Length: 94
Image (cartoon, rainbow, N blue to C red; front, side, top):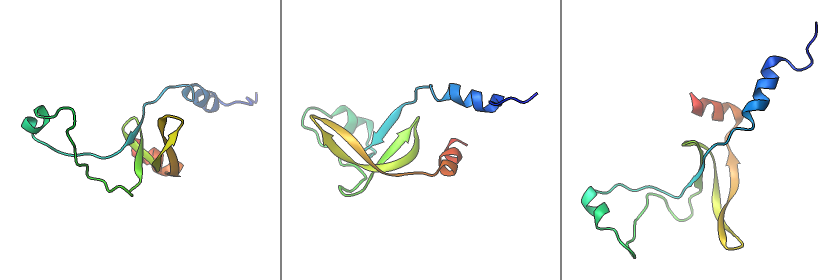
């Protein structure tokens, strides 16, 4: 008996409907708790990334690509420049 859609193919279709969290990371910094508690309106945080460096595209906390910030109407958006290969993305999961 031949099955046109093997079970593995059908199961992947179910996964494609799952929601994942997408994050664009502008940069990071480390500070003491005292410095954190002193933050207020107008405070400036210096980040570990240069202005011309690409932004990281993360899915569920794992990097899958890079891009640059752009404006779409009155909102920020990410113009994706590079997405890791399928093998690289799967390796990120492990």
